[in-house]
Length: 304
Image 1 (tube, helix red, strand yellow):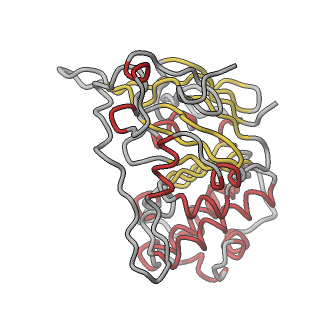
Image 2 (cartoon, one colour; image 1 turned 60 degrees about the vertical axis):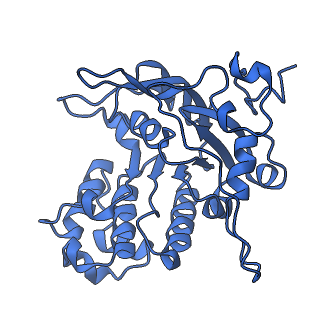
């Protein structure tokens, strides 16, 4: 049984006077205990919405989310189900996710109390993420962006999660800190036996830490597979385009290829395959019929 199972998830955003925006349009993925899954795609493809639904922060319109055998439902006014506190998220902006009025040690202690851990100290959690224990008495504004993200990771891990979600956790950091923080999240999650769903648009970093990759486009998962296989031989034209867009330090000043066009409006998606208006290999059927979901959701690879 998977630790996390997302089955045909649909999430609509509704604004009065405007058509509904289907941010997630039938996405499915799984995360096993001790596994790192990278969820990648361009901005606006629905990655963060999927993560928020998994955490119960956004209501699902359709489909199902199963965590450790139980259903995940949206958070309400009542106290959260203790079982669902075993899902923890590290957000994109570490400063916004930390309370500026409270010392970081007190915030980490909240997670330890949630887990019923009376032995570990906030200082001990800071040391696990590479910060001195003595910093527990400081406030968030006294740290750099990379340090604050390490604090956010320590706070999330203090709750002893079975599933850790990183929602673009490195995009607000400078290049020198990105790989360090991503690798730290992977190592700490794997050491504790937790699964990690790592969301990013930076495939080069995801390649370093993920066991499997799921590629998302306009609310749908279009390709999944082991990281090494997808990197060596991507099959979906969108995955191929994402990899061609990664800069290569070849010393020749070669510019990466840009994806043609823009991501369509999710309130008015294209018919058939959602990628066909931008796809260099589009066929007539691509504009008429949606390909079946699978390891590669593309008419170039029809199911047997």
